[in-house]
Image 1 (tube, rainbow, N blue to C red):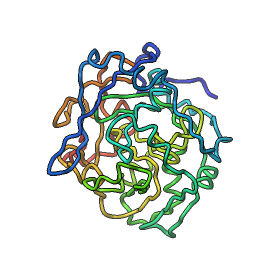
Image 2 (cartoon, one colour):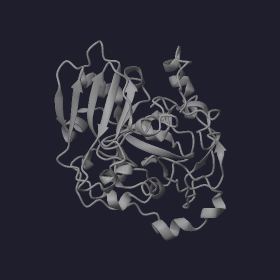
Image 3 (cartoon, rainbow, N blue to C red):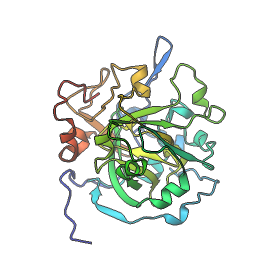
Image 4 (cartoon, rainbow, N blue to C red):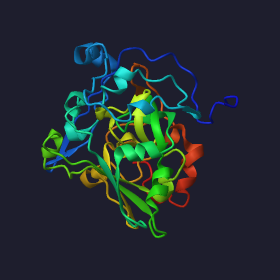
Length: 334
């Protein structure tokens, strides 16, 4: 390994994350019968001591379903991606989760254990040379796996630093062989209301979908996640395959993926369908552009009671700002 040089986006080192959490329960705003994502950014003291009552000793839930790819982990860390801050405690990152398929609260990790992960296939279709259906274990084993430490910034103004394992999304695009006219990737998560109680709520436009441009998908930072903390990614964090886009708000990092459709039409994603004035297609992090109902200027790292400044593109501007040249008329930051 060459001598480590701190990446341009790295932030100053801070004290290690303590075994506690600022629990910011979002409020679910109802409008015309539609559930809309929200945030209740109360003062830290309002939630002091709640974590132990809710999650015990922050022990991640145990998945009783054996993962056929366990032997692949841990994978080698790519030292070019360090996160710039201490890692978030694994117990926090795996018990404080958004996954609307299993509910609109943060304690969905127990419910998510109902999701069957095998058999699991991934469809690559649309404007591609040849449509494919790939078994998830075959896909994972044929990809060049590595670990990257990324910052994750939720639209609700909390954040974490996580060691994801997986592969560059560019590798998936290469496998799909999109045609020259393809401009976007529409992604879809699973749909199984028998085990995912949230999918029984008819006011949501299930299944969950998200979209990115081909240029975003092939940017070196775009990362397909198959593991975390040196082991296969757990169900509540998006097993067996999720996306990590560290320069965008977290709702863009879609979980439990089953389909990638290449298209020349810009997708309208899940939250955009529900509240386009609050959740747009681009969703890039910008501290100077507030959410319509709260500020994005600061964030609360999980395990801390100290708010810190939010950075443009979550600190990854040098790597991604060029993607948006000529798009100044677009709503790039919501």
